[in-house]
Length: 504
Image (cartoon, rainbow, N blue to C red; front, side, top):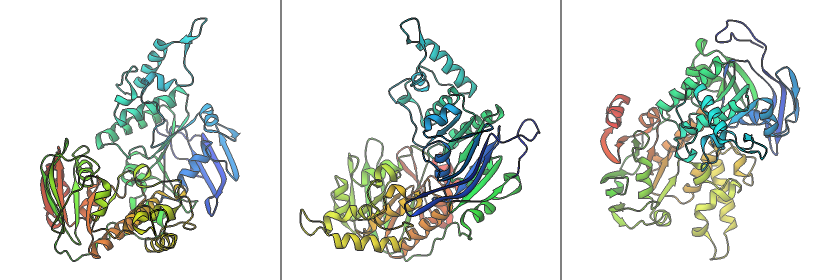
C-alpha cells in the first residue's frame, strides 16, 4: 500500500492505523466487503464515496459503534478490538459527528472535562480554575479565541465544533475522524476550520476527513481514499488528480452535473404579496407552473424564514398568498398542505422523516388522513401501493418497503421525503437545501427528479447555498439579503459574480 510523504519532515512513516479485511453486514445489506484502510501520522486523509458506499459504517467500526464481522484493526502498532466508543476514545481515536455531543447549558471548560472533571483537596471538589486554565491552553493550541467560561449554547456552530476538537485533544487523541465537518459552516468558518485541521496535522495528529464536498477535499487533503458499494475502489493524491477522477471512481459511471431539461412554463401557480414577519420585510414574488424558482443568499439572508412563513410554520405580521389566483389563508402547515403546498425541509432527519419508522410508513405519512377509510381506519391498500409506486418511480435503494428509514443512505432518505409529498400531488413543491449532505451520484438523481417534476407542470421553489446548483437548475433566481429580495435574474443573465454582489 502506498505510503505518502508526510507534511513537515519529508520522511515516510509507519501508519498509525491499519484496517485489514473489514467486513460488516446488516439485514439485507453488505455494508463493508473486505475493506483495507490505513492512516499515517500527520496526514489529512479524505474518505469519499456515494451515500451507502460504506464510509460511515467503516468509521463506526473503527470507533467502536459497530462490531465488525471480520477483519483486523491495528492502532499504534497493536491489534485492538473496541467494544464501545469510550474504549476507542481512551485509546486515542475520537469521532466528531455532524450532530455535536455537547451540553449546551454548560461552559466550554465543563464540556471538555465532562465525565473526567479535575478535583482538588481532600473533599475532591471540582477544580473549575484548573479546568478553565487547561481549556484555555487547548483552545490556544487550536488558535481559537473562545472563553473557557462561555456557555456552549451562546457559541456559533463553528465555535462549538472547535470545542469538540479541543475535547478530543484533552483525551490525547492521535486520530480524529471528522464526519461532514463543513456541512453547516459559512465559507469563512470553513477556512478557519481548515487552518485548525492543518495545525493539528503539523502537530502529528492523523485526521480522517469525511465529506461530500469534493472541492474541499482537494483543498484540504493529503490523500484520498474512494469507496463504492462497501469496497475500497481507489486511492488518489489531490495534486496529481482531478475531481472528475474522483467522481468516476465514486459512481462508476459518467455524470451530467445539472441534468436540467426544458419545461413548458405556463400560468402563475403561486403569488406571494408583501409577506412580513419579524425577520422578513415586505417580500413579494410569483411562481409559474413548470418553473424552478431559485432563492440565493448568504446564511441568515432570510430564505428559510420566508418559506416557513409561507408554509404556516412561523406567524406572518402581514401579507397575502394566492394559489392559482385564489387567496388562501395559511395559518398552519395543515392549511398549507390543504392548499396544495409541499415542503422538503433543510434537515430531513429531524423535520422530514420519522427515522425509526419503515419506508412505507414515511412515504404515506403526509397522505394518511386524506386517504383513510374512516376516522379510525387506515387505508392499508393505498399505503402499500403508494410505497411500491414511489420506491420504483424515484429509484429508492431499499431492500423493501418495510426497511427502517434510518438504515437508508442520506440520498435515499431524501428521496423518501420527496415521495412523501408527491403522494399528495401538490401544486407547489418547496425544496430547502434538497442536496445537502448527499453524494454526487444521489445529487444527480435528485436534480433529474426535480427537472422531471417541473416538466410535469409542478411549480418548484429551490433554496440552496450552493450557487452552481442554483445557476444550474433554476429558470429564474431571486437573491435575498437581510430579509428582503434585493435582485431577480432570468437564467440566461445570472452569474455567480452578480448573485454574490447582490447578496453581499
